[in-house]
Length: 176
Length: 120
Image 1 (cartoon, one colour):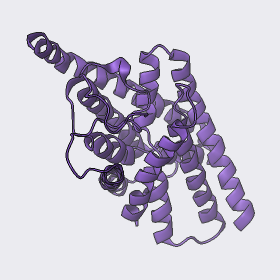
Image 2: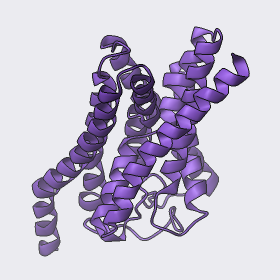
Image 3: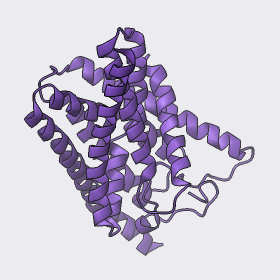
């Protein structure tokens, strides 16, 4: 958060040095002439907006393709959130522990696409509709199910991605 | 209209998150917590307003799946909780999960009630 623009290059594998909040962390910018802080900030916001549009369109498209009846378990929003969290687990391990990526990659894919694709508010309002609409059982099941499945997804994909790619990172570091 | 809402919502989430995170030095992800609650308030108000009065379809798309749904995030929420758990703050991780869901529901209820009271 403090040195988000021109900090030292991250060492892939420096998981513990990463802040808890992945949205406000920006990878170091490659040194290049003409990159003022204002322009970097504008580029980051543009990348987030562009990614957000892609993510939101994918989510909205899913809700149009697979509409859910008001009293039914909202499977579409459920799967949107679970798949988005699964992708987040893969992405964050790859860009924080395996590869040093361009500073616009995390804002675009993480904050923009996946942040815009997944939704906490729609899930909450789905739950509220079920609770007040006479389906408290489905509502509680949906809220707890989304929470557990999303957390399970991000944990499982992060663990699997580490298993798959980190041995390579260690081997590369060992050689250098 | 969904696209317009997303163009506003995604950068707004980043800016709010950064602004909130810069104002405290705890490990708790208050930034994401704040945007998620704000989005629940917005979507709750829209739901109440749509029940109490006629809201144009375009405005509903702009605020609902566009702005509020994009402003809130489940991927960052779950990832930050995982980070908390992995860095040893397991109670913070569990608290973040449970408090976020309950506070989100409470905020949505209040916002829906407020919209119904104001516009009904």
